Image 1 (cartoon, rainbow, N blue to C red):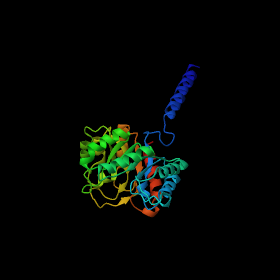
Image 2 (cartoon, rainbow, N blue to C red):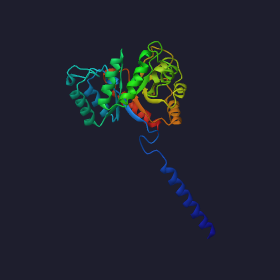
Image 3 (cartoon, rainbow, N blue to C red):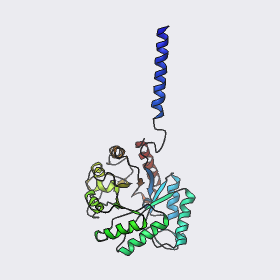
Image 4 (tube, rainbow, N blue to C red):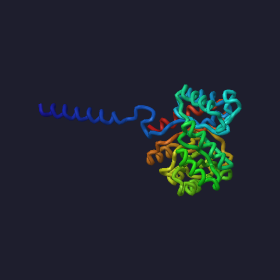
Length: 280
């Protein structure tokens, strides 16, 4: 009788323990890091703004990042960002709202302080959280003041070595010093093109990364490396996601597919799902 009672008690403990463990198992997207998955609309730069949104919406993206030189289409009368009228901005917001998409950032550029002011004015009207770009050194202080004035952050984006001052995270750290509104956009693919270890780069920028640009390559340390589907190239994304988990990253994750231009929607969809699986 005592033996049976002991077995019953042990069984109950095992059931309770199993239930407790099960309750902490991932149950779907977003249960790992609370990052914000989305698409860089540059992936669809062969299409109008509305067509690009349709593509992002069709694969259940939540966020999109615009880019200032997008040929927006006839609906915007040939105008470009940031030179849209208030009515055109309202129309742009309507296109996003209709699809349940959120645009919280824009890849921007400027040759002068006035150019950057126009970017910030647009960002404020659109309700953007940050501008993403590679500002010239002589404009850093003015941009910091604009960021404070308009309450819009700045993410420093890295391009490959030889094509940008910001190819190495150390240059991003330099730009951020004394400028509390400056953060980092970690472009994983361009780091690898430049021969850098992306995990070490993420560690250098820990605590200041506001977004990621996700791509994959067929070779490392090669400026001319080809863009391939995420997860099929040389980049070790499990190691990258593990590092992001250590940092408790909760920013934006934008898929930026720079290839297969006219039919890359399945590639972008694959990348979103691939990262979601790694994040569980």
